[in-house]
Length: 251
Image 1 (cartoon, rainbow, N blue to C red):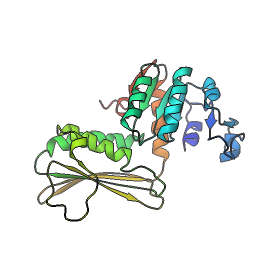
Image 2: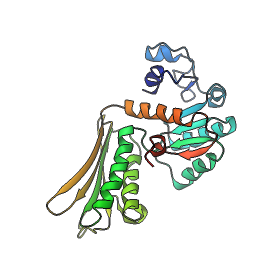
Image 3: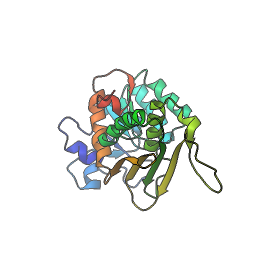
Image 4: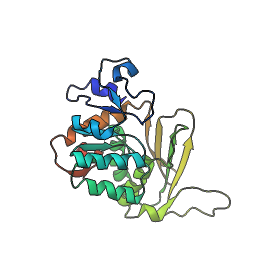
């Protein structure tokens, strides 16, 4: 999806592409792999490939991303991070690297999702009394982290708008005799199955009414398009830590 979107974007060109060492596609061109017009050879040496680019777009896993961001730092190359599942230490390393290079770090690159973040901030400030808040997310069977980074970010946005700390008020699972719901909590429910791209719903449940804010992704193209928008945003910047709210001017 990233490659397809980049090839259609007249402000972006593909300088390098990578896969893990030992992958059967290493050594092939992007064109051979995807049936498109692109003669960039897929490599497994990220450091070498960074010599030919201004920005790396990274959707991998935390361990890989943290290695890549250090390589970007040494090469003076910006990075767009769509990877989720970082611990606090990993987030600190990303912030530290952003002192030297421009970084866009967001749990979800889709423009629509980031508009939803803004809507949630508004809704939470208005529905700040008498409403129970639950977040439900669904993804494909291969997703390895739960709740999703997007769901957690939604929780953080709502908690901040209410003057709470998500770490203190989040409830990630219910089983057995749980007792009555604590109205100060934010609940999370996770669904994993099939090829669901990504569904997220935040429910504000009051007495006699329920407000739901939902985003559903039917393909991964929105993530790719948002990533390219982020890449264009950091072009020419020397350093700094940004997210998609900055990219879209929603601050």
